Amino acid sequence: MSANAKKSNRKTIIALLVVVALVVVALIVGKVAFGAKDKAPKGDTTIKVGITNSADSAIWDAVNKVLKKENKHIVVKLVQFQGGTTQTADALTSGDIDLSANAHYAFWKNLVETKGYKVTNIGDTVINAYNLYSTKHKDLASIPDGGKIAVPNNATNAARAYNLLEQAGLITLNPANANLPTKQDITGNPKHLTVDEVDPNQIPNLLQDYDAGVTNVFSIIDHGMKPDQDAIYKADVNLSDPFNHQWINTIACATANKDNPLFKDVVDAYHTRQVADTIIKEFQGAYTPAFKY
Image 1 (cartoon, rainbow, N blue to C red):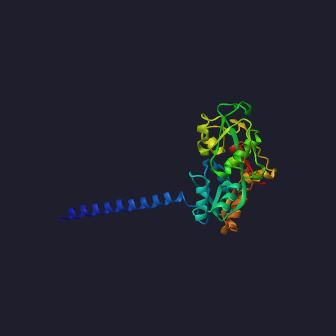
Image 2 (image 1 turned 60 degrees about the vertical axis):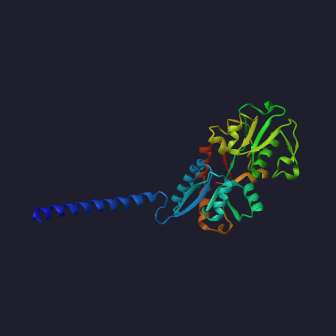
Image 3 (image 1 turned 135 degrees about the horizontal axis):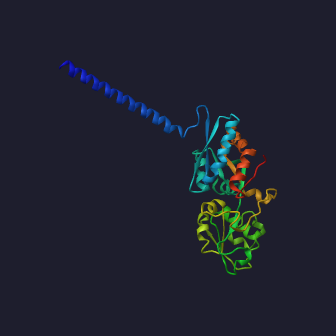
């Protein structure tokens, strides 16, 4: 082989080595950059919190800011579940998430009593507006005799809906089951209303077929409606009324982990003025802070 050929081969080998080195570096950098999205800063502990409503991220952004300001070395990572509160509860008890922040006391009480879940509420968060909506009528008086009302088809939120309809004067309930009434507890129905239990997320779409419907603020917001403006009757959210305590949402954990000091730090960060101000500003009446700050 000539000297020129050897020199040419040497240059080719060097060029190939440079290319390989650049590719390896690019892969390493890309892997680090990609992985960094799901990891807390070095030295921080990640706490996974289950939610069902993406709008709640604004609240937890504020919580993370408080944790960072107080040098707690904790980062909350949100895990959203589309399947509702029961799916989040399953993830909590299986250890897939550390905390749940999308259900109220009544939901957890029912789940513990009927399913045997070992879950403990460790901090109050908000109480959600639970109102009566209609696209056909502007007030309660306009709902006709024999009208149709849609309510959620899960036990605790159906109970809350029946209580709301009683507050509105549309029905009366058996007082013996005041906290968790069912359709069978309706003892008075002066307008002869038909009440159907349906998927709460579909109630805004079904308002064209019903005279009115009761559902959660998540469904209303997701369908472009405004909880405060589009309701024809608004629930009483007076936090000093013991009856409303059951509808307060909580931060919950597996009972075995209830004394985890990191969880207490998360709850304390939530129970601050900064977070309360965020809730008031972002949700404008759809959520009410249910904690002292």
